[in-house]
Image (cartoon, rainbow, N blue to C red):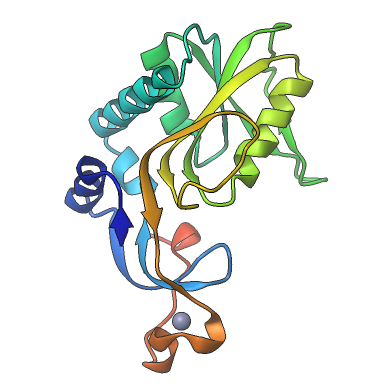
Length: 199
Ligand SMILES: [Zn+2]
């Protein structure tokens, strides 16, 4: 694990959010390590601290007056809420339409024309979710000025169409399923994102 922010990594380690084992990532690749943001974010104090850090990082790229923070549910909701608290903004979230799979605003969430917005999620891997939320917010009339995540698993490469910040850049060693040393050792494979707690 190469993580360019020791305080954030320490927080993940202290709370047990840094998992070691044999994991199938969303990409389909296998890895021996995984960061589970929900484990850190279950602690309101840590969530608030990370939100304040991300708000500061957003100010660092010129974000000033933000009216609304938008996040993709579920993963982005807690951190987005805390970034909104730190920026003095409100927080809304997008969901996938069960019928079409398209990202949409539900629950009566609305954006005023030209409202300044940032998009926040927990982890950026390819940047796909963040790009989807940027697009939803633009269609709703917002002026999206930046995006942020706690963890950047793209190694800094993901392009979401607006300036992007993260608290930690992570380079995970991954293996294709047909050439994975952990598979060859017969270590059971888990899919950490959706793994039931009591197992
Ligand atoms: Zn494997």
